[in-house]
Image (tube, rainbow, N blue to C red; front, side):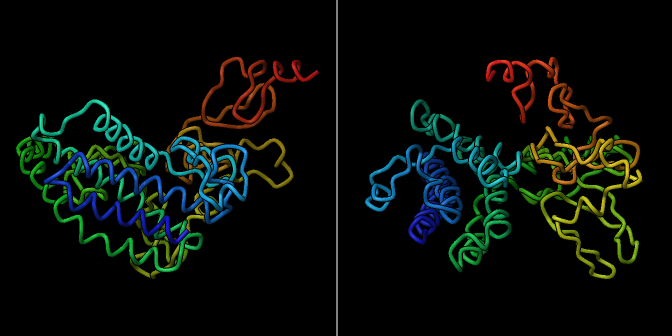
Length: 339
């Protein structure tokens, strides 16, 4: 596994350094780094998870095997590890992957003078998600020191931030016009520019929609359970109270946000916890305020729905689910086939 992570950092450094002089190589190297980190995390669980089909230990040791593709790796995080990669992260990696494919097969960067700018912003977003995984949930499954190396990579993003700043100054007049209409802006978590428009989803829930990098990140008002001082909660990162310094871990978000007051003896009739069909997280949806809230991605919903066959609860209404089933069953059709 050390070899995988070292190679990943090698490609990552190359991607950051080659952005201006060789944007095509930058894209190819960055995507190679993403794939290697995904495989390193899977390898940290078990060697067979990075083998595409029919795992054979001797072939694995000799290097004579076909490794999983990007989509296969993403699927194994969800189906085998039950630790799905956040949807926004998958989308960011997917954009880099598609850009890489265009570069390799159809695209010539010299024909587009803005290529480095486009690539820089895409990589800023993708790196933010990748870095959060490397220094967060994956720490214990990667070689010692990997998180520290990832943190040190931040200084290599100087060129990328420069392009984000150029884009910010280019649309500054448009942002000022939006401000005059009452729209509030905050600093974007991904590109660091003060260009994330605050869009109210609920009185207590907002989406930060960045005009520079296109990222959308939710945040919500949250009273500290320890001192009741109002703070701000973000998905995928612990809540830290600015007043009493109390910390609420992400694993404890459900308990902290759930407002279901149903008696314990009515558990079998309860409609939460439910599955979030936005981020595909199992049993992350709780009752909150006047509706439902996913405690993993902070998506709000007005209702939850039960599968007509297996009864699994989710946030998406599934048509004809009694016959076709849902993500967790094959419905009556599958039951009939098996008989």
